[in-house]
Length: 485
Ligand code: ADP
Ligand code: GLC
Image (tube, rainbow, N blue to C red; front, side, top):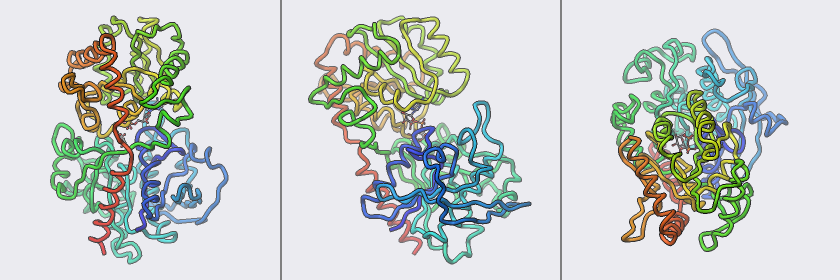
């Protein structure tokens, strides 16, 4: 079986969120299972910095638009852990400061950037190997199934290839003006409510939902939620139509990068049998955040997140004063909406000695917070999968999460009677329930060390490896390929 991955992010080349972690790990797992796997990525500035030497395997592909052609090269990124990487090189579109936009707005030509990326992936595959299945991710890769089943419908080289769309977050859909249809040389009859029209906008993700052979999302809970008006971001009706082709396959963790027994980014290694290294990681974390004075009995709470309302920052804002009144220390790492950046900075000024903040994207600090905190906060409004709650469990840091999507699937509420459970959850999206869940955690941290250690060990014992999810994807690849043959 040959699978081509099309996605807009992949570690170690380019990352803005969890998508990059998934695309960095799943292809390798599939290669381990014996499949031939190819990944196509845009050759962004960030990718170029990783792989500066250009090795073209296709010197020029013509990608037509309504009034002009663009020319792209396909670069060989080499084979790593059995996975072949190719980069779509079009400097005028991809060699820019950031993958999607500036701090204040998305690039206006993202329709062109990702339309071109999708068409170039199909054209390149015709020369470098047509797969049994194109596994495409999020709106940026959603034109692959759309082109395949429309413009390329009569292309005999491509027609037997199947397509799977994985939705990592339905609230990012890629909306553009209606004329995008003709700019991308797609027939206007696609621009209907059953096609990729969404309230008079051209909707990339909706196109993927309509034309992919199968659709997956990244947790079982979110696969149900996304089919309801509250979580579907307007796509719930079209997703319900496709319910028989929908699958919830939970994300795994890349234990080669995220494992406290081997992680190179943390101060000391540890396992659930010997947590001594975690104490050292805590010390190192506090040092890194200028808080070496914090006593051992004061709990350290960590947050690593995009600053966005969907990540629960409105709740954090609402509980901040009451939270920081308690005996604890809060560490925050993130970037995002300027409003929340300002708010978090203000908290640091108002509560010196109670909170330390780093505004920015910093992989090493991210690992340090997962390892060195006592408690990890993730109060997301919704969360398709969420990786940080699983990282924190693996690192013996007890998560407090809102019971939604992958957070609800991954974390089990602590039960003092049965001594089972891995963390603390709240259901209603309101500040009081969030604070109550934090207080349940703080109470045990302070008053029952034996129970606390049991919670830590329960979490560390959970298996979030890619083994099972990869087998589920493999079965789906087989099914989709069978349907197309
Ligand atoms: P999302 O993709 O919605 O942002 P996930 O929990 O799936 O949420 O993944 C976020 C990923 O990005 C995790 O690997 C997390 O550690 C990382 N991350 C988020 N913000 C930062 C940051 N400011 N610095 C370093 N890593 C970050
Ligand atoms: C998206 C989701 C996040 C998920 C990640 C990887 O960014 O918001 O919940 O973990 O994709 O699937």
